[in-house]
Length: 201
Image (cartoon, rainbow, N blue to C red; front, side):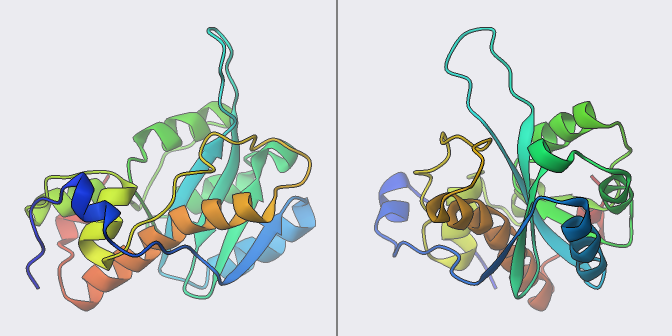
């Protein structure tokens, strides 16, 4: 399968708009996290993204509030602002045997390490995978359009990710970002487009 090396903003905007509409599990207690980790560890790779409350004033900083991890039939929304980046999450992100697949994730990992230091292992940057396939446009919208042939909304990106209860729109937005990473990686795996050199972050 040969993918287009470039895609314009107009081409992206002409594609149908899609978002995740499957099962979402909000994880905001240690008990919920223990159940989620047990389920997540049954998979060989996970779609991965984070969300942080935006800072609209100079000098204001917010820690990462949400960690999204997607599998084939569910997206887990782990509320780090409520339960922290616990040892079980550190072990998951240090496990070479389970791939954590995301887009533009260097900043995500840096912010997670500020919560609790760990050594990332088994992390796959889809921007690098795409580059190896000759695709020049980076980012979630462009890679989704290139590989999955639909566009995703970014309308909730600057919403409050630390609010007591996430809205349904927030949940679906956050889930979509991790879900498309899972879908892209699964598709490229099925087409034998993943080189083993892509697996070392």
